[in-house]
Length: 597
Image (cartoon, rainbow, N blue to C red; front, side, top):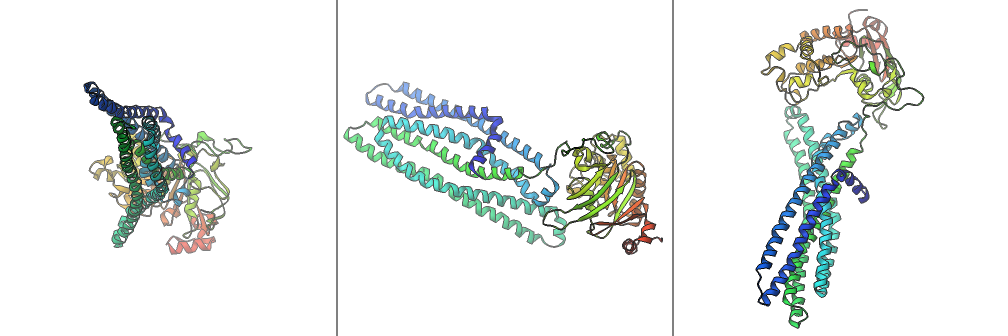
C-alpha cells in the first residue's frame, strides 16, 4: 500500500484523538527540553568547580530538571498509551461492525480465521503506529534538531565529526527499514494462517478425533506456527540490526569526539567544561535518534497492519436499513408495503407472505456454473410448500435468494409482489424465520438461543413455544432450566435437541414467511410427529417453505415443487406428482414416499 494511502487511513483513526495526541506530544517536548537543559547545567557546574565557586545551587537545578522532566514525560507517556488503547478500541468496533455486515459470498471467499486475526492481532499493532510512532517521530525529530543546534553553537568542529559518523551509519539503517516492513507483513499473514487452521480444527474437532487425524492437524498448525516464527525472527533480526546501529553510531561518535575534543582542549581551542557538555549532548542524542528509529520501525510494522485492516474494510457489505435505489418506481410498489413486512414479534398474527420466482438464474461466482436456470414458481399466501429433488437441484439456494444472502444473476425474486432487492433488508429479514440445515446453536444459555431472533418475547410466549416444539420436557431436565449453558455450538445438546431449539427460535419470532431446510432430519419419530402438528398449525397463519424428503412432511404439503438441475420440473400435490412426473415418482419410490396415486 502506498505511504500516502497508509497515512490517509491513519489520519481517519487518530482524528477523534488528535488533541490528546498533541497534548501528549507537548508533554514529551517539555520533558525533552528539561533533558537538553541538563548538559548546559552540567557545564556551568564544571566551570564553577574550576573557579572554586559554590555548586549547591546548580546541584538543586540539576535535581529539579531530572525530577520535573521524568514526571512530565511519564504523564505524557500515560496520555499516549491511553489514546493508543482508544484507537485500538475504535478500530475493533468499526472492523467488527463491518465484518458482521459482510455479504455471504464475501465470507465464503475469505478464511474466517484470517478475519479474526485482523480484528485481534492487526488492530493491536495499529496502536503503535497510530500514536507512539507519530509522536515519537515528531518529538524525536524536534529534539534531535534542538540538540544538534545547541551542539553546533557550543562546538561546530565536534558537531561535524559527530554528524559525519551518524550519516554513514544512518544510511545503513535506511536500507534495513524496507526489509523490516516485508518481514513484518509476512509474519502477520502467517499469524492469520494459524488462526485459520485452528478455526478449521476446532470447528470439526469430533471429525478429527473420529478420523484419528490429531497428528496431521497438529502438523498443519505447527507448520503455520513455524512459518510465523520464521518471519518473526527475520523481522526481529532487521530490527535488532537497526537498533544496534544506533548504539554503534553513538559509541563511534563518542570515540571520535573524545579524540578530536581532547586534542582541541590540549591546544586551548576549547575548555574541559565545553567538552564534557558536548559529550553529554552526544549521549543525549541516543534518545531522539532511538525515537526516530523506533518510529520508523513501528511504522513499517503498523503499515502492514493498516493494509490488512483496510483490505478487510474493503470487503463488500450488505446495506443497512435502506433498500437498493430503483429507477422509475416508488419504494412502496407491490403488494404489501413496509408496514406489512415485519414479523409480528408477538404482537398478533400478520398476513402471510407470498413468494414468486420469475425466470430466476443464479450462480455463486462468475467462474462457476449456474445453479438456477430460469426458475419460476408462485407460492400463494399461507399454507405449506415443499421443495423436493435430487441433491444439487438448487433447493437450498431458493432460500438463500429469498433471504437475500445472494442476489439473483437474472430474473426476479418477489416477496409480496415486491422484489427482495427493493425491500429494506432489515424489514425483509424481520418478516422471515429461517431454520438452517445444520441447525446452528450459539454458545450461551438455552434462553439466549431461543430469544436470539426475538429478544422482546414474553415469558408466556416463550413457554408456549417450548410446549409446541416439545422442548418443555428438556428444560425441566436441565440443571438450570432455560439458563443452562448449552456449550460451544450446542455441544451439550443432542442433534435432535439442537434442531428443536432452532425451530423454536424461528417460531417464537412469529414470522410471516418460514423457511425450513431439512428441519426434521435429526428428529426421532415421536418428535417428528409433534413437529408435523406444529408446522400444520403454523401454516394457518404463515407461509411455510420446506426442503424435505420425508413422507410426513411431503404429504402434509399443500403443494410440492419438484426441482432438477436448477429448473422447476413440476408443481402439484403428492398424489398428482406421483401420477404425472416420472422423476418425482422415482424419488417417492426410492424414499418410500409413495402412497399410491
